[in-house]
Image (tube, rainbow, N blue to C red; front, side, top):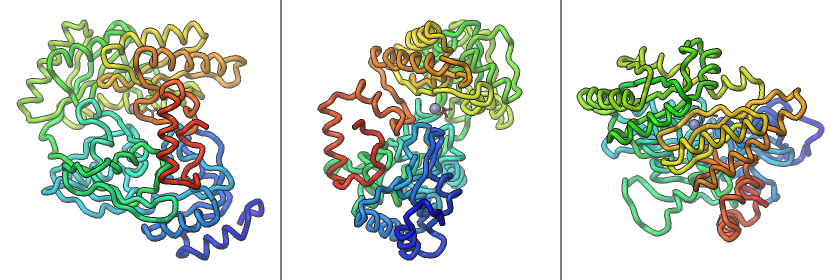
Length: 462
Ligand code: MLT
Ligand code: ZN
């Protein structure tokens, strides 16, 4: 045990739970107190429960002593929502990872929170069903984390976000009481929708211990297209043209030229240097509908000025087209060393305008802005890389981010389309949510967690 930590609390926790559930070594504590925000963290202890009753015991222990608890999935949050500090308990739910029930006739899956999103996707597909939410982190993020942050991802334009698939939850509240909200029916209108209140609440209202998710029949066929353009706006206008032609693809992903350079450097995929933007498009349905959609899309893209359109029919060809897109998020860090990353959303019709204004604002602040992501729902990832050892580089990026956020809000947008608030955007939230509305949110928090011990200091500004 670490001499810096209060032994008695750690000892009590160890005695309370079955052997192996409580981790107190400095290495474990530091590793599991941080997330993808890359901020520093620590904790009093990590509890890794295997059952709901162990979660209940932990919450009762914490409530009785006024110790705060940070629920955690796989720690892929880029906003600091799973970050803990030295006096807190990290409740690591990754060992509650059973798919409890997969029921194609009911069109539901019942899972524990630590199941990886990608594992549910595969399990559902093995029985002819489909779990549409597909965050870029699907292979490394848990469904509990996806629900807690309302993860969006690559198929949201057609299928919606995690919220649209949550039917029911079992939740342990701050005082250790377990509740059940929502259920297994695909439709239900009975009182306030408490299940959805927990979706996106970032661990501030309760600890998810069981999740009932909607599944849909697996589409028979998927087809991928990759189009390139000679100007940065081309890909954005191409996306408009596809939707305008009456096609709703399941993915509609944009990349600008700087992003393509990064993708090329880290994935080995090469692009014509004249290309200024690209669009990755995926449709699904029957064999015939996919072929017909691909024809309509190719035509719309040609009219919108695409330089090239490539089609991937089989899994290997599709994976090749996706390779560049999937390498971006980590690729920017690999190439540049440091970045600020925003996931601003705007009303769909304002996307091209937003990207142009944000890039130009970045430039005038002496920063660069790389734009990529979900053009279908106008939620792009704006990455602002910088070299931390260059004086003034970080502050130029901070100013650029501030201006980018203001531009998105001025256009009627949002400061986060899918990554949420966590620690990093708490203050920025005030620019989007009114004081009275923030107060309503605080009151809701107090109803569920009067002592304020569940992930305090996250999401809601002071
Ligand atoms: C993505 O769509 O690639 C991710 O949401 C972006 C990221 O991880 O920064
Ligand atoms: Zn994304």
